[in-house]
Length: 178
Image (cartoon, rainbow, N blue to C red; front, side, top):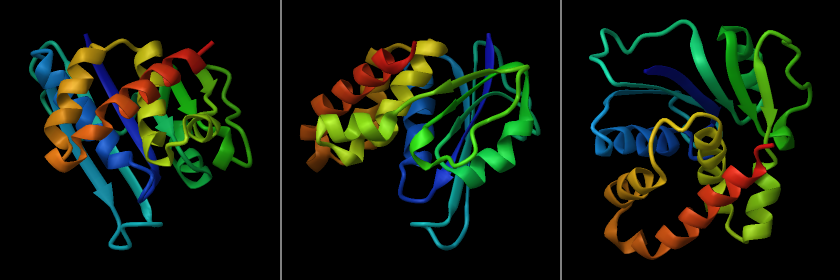
């Protein structure tokens, strides 16, 4: 098993955090992982993406030009990465910030209303966890338990009270996938 993933959006949407948590979860499940962030100097509001590879065998390089799965959080990222999803791959996106939906017919395209779910959950900061839950429903690469352990490792202790909210968001994201 080897999955090559790009997660892309604006800084402040939790793109890098989602990738980091996914990578830690892979480690918790004793898998090989790479996590390679890319962002501009703007941080919040600038473009950000992260490449995550999860595998049960050693990974030769973290550098990719094509992806098995893309999780897209804004139009600019869709414009940049839609064409880079491998034929037969998966593109998950939130229609909330997409003006022109994906057009490819040779990939599995899944709209996930993550922003609406965060409104329902009254937790805007869990946006990335809703999308992570959707990703894990489609591609069960790691266990939810491993994600929670990875989240606990990446969150500062003063935010550990948010772990149940994040788990609820992950579960809600799983429910959103048809």
